[in-house]
Length: 514
Image 1 (cartoon, one colour):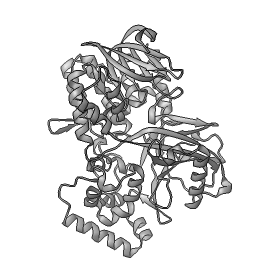
Image 2: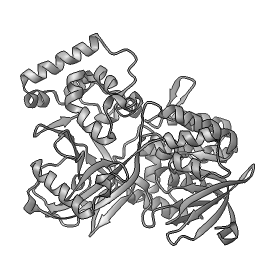
Image 3: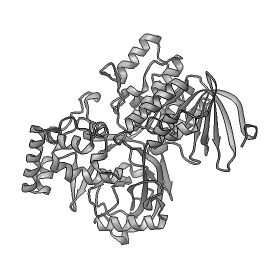
Image 4: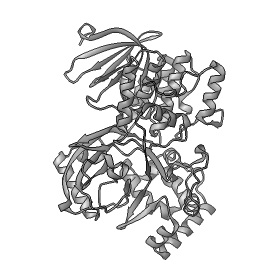
C-alpha cells in the first residue's frame, strides 16, 4: 500500500505512545496532564492495560498473571492513588507451593516446612544449604547456580527447578542469573527463616522491604484493568487520544525531530500518525523491524535473536468449596503442565458475581505456535479441568465451564546472550533514532513489574518535558529505583534532584481535579 492510500491524521502531536499497558498509559497520562498532545496506539480492540488488563467472561473478572499493587517507590504509590479515584482494597498476601500433594507456605515458615518435608528431608536441606554457604559457586552465571548459592542444591531442586522450567521452557542452567537476581532479590534461606521468626515490621522504611516477603498489598476492586481504564479515561479528558485495534507496522523519521507512525486496523486499512516523539512499549524485536529505512544488519540480527515466552490462562468457573484461600499456588509437580493457579476471589471478592461460585485461573507457559498454544479452547478447558481434579483442588462435578485467554510475548527471555543483543540494539537506536524512547517490559526486554515499567515511563516523560535526557531509563532497577554512578537513589531523592534543577517538577502527583 502506497502512502497515498493511508488514512492520514494531519494533526501532528507531541508524542505517540505505542501500547496502552502500564508504561504507555503512564507516559501518556503525565504528558497530557502537562499540556502535551498525545496519541496512544493499542493493538487490542477491546482492552487497555496490556498484561495488566482485566478480562471478563459472563460477569467474572480475571487478571492476566496476577498483579499485586505494592511498590518501594512512594511516587508510584501516589500515582496509583491519583489515577484511581475509587481507591483500593487492602488484601492479605498468601501464596503457597504445591509439592508432593502438600501445600507449603511461601515465603518459608520454618515449622510448616519442617513438618511437611519431614525431619530427615529438612536436615538434608539444611546441610545442603550449609555446604552452599561454605563452598559457594564462584561468579554464578545461570539461574541454577545463583539459587543454589542462596538456598542450597536440595531446596533448589524441591522448590525452584520444576516451576522455573515450566515458566521458561528451558533448563535452569540455560537461564541467565540476571533473572534470579532480579526476581528473588534480597531473599535467601537465612532471610526467609528470619522472616518466619520475626515478620517484617509495618514501620520498616518502604525501600527496605523485600517484596517477596510482604504480608498485604493493595488491589483494585475489579482487578488491575480498573486502574488502567481509569487512566485511559483521564488521558482523554486531558485532551489525549486512545486508539484501539491498531497494530503499528512502520515507524519512519521525517526529519531530525519528527516521526510518521503507520498502524493497521483490523480491516487492513492503514492509518498514518505524526509526532515529535515516539514512546515505544512494543516488543523490541518487532520495533526494530518496523523502523524504516531498515536498521543495520547486525541490529536486526540481534533483534531476531531475542526470545519471548508466551502464556495462556484457562479461567474455570466452579462451585466455591473454599478448598484454599491463596491468591495463587505454584505447582511444583512435573506430572501436570499447569504452572500456577490463581484464586480470583482471594484477590477481590468483587471479581466473582455469585458468592456461591469462584473462578480459578490455571496458567500455562508455552511458545506461540506450539502444541499447547495451538490447542482448541475446548481441549484446554478439559486439560485444566482434569489437572485441577488430579491435584485434588476441585472435583469434576464442581467445575461448571471455562474460557481461555492467550497472551503473546508475556515474558522476555533471559538467555546467555540476551544482554549482548540488547546492547547492540541500544547502540544503533541511540545513534540513529532521536526522540525514540523505549520503556516498559517488552519495550526494554526487561522482565519487570508494573511499578518498574511505570517508573521508566515517568522518567521518559520528564526527559521529554525537559527537552533533553535528564535520566538514563536503563538505570531503573526492578524496584523502581534509579541507579546513578554506582549508587541507588530512591525515586523520592531523584525527583528532589530534578526539582532542584528545574525549580518545580511538573510530574509530582497532584490531587485529582475530577
